[in-house]
Length: 118
Image 1: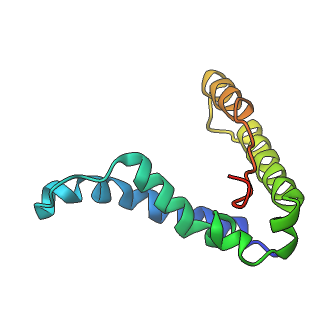
Image 2 (image 1 turned 180 degrees about the vertical axis):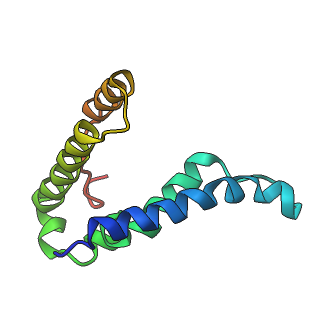
């Protein structure tokens, strides 16, 4: 599996992140019944940035993942390791923020549930 260059992902993230406040308040701006919760905006942004790696779209293209889930766990471990390395090497983070981000990242639990087992 080939991932897009890091610079492209960062650019797409910046564009997506800059649109989040607009999406968050669009209910008020357009007179919709309810605003979008920020969590839903974040989740939709992740799916837009990494569509092949978020949820059903990823599993639909990986036959072995339906049987064992090992491929998914390995991919997720690589993503989490890359995030950890990025957090440790970002120059603009102060030590308090870096420590907090790493603590939150390390607190994540990976759970793989197969649809036919649930």
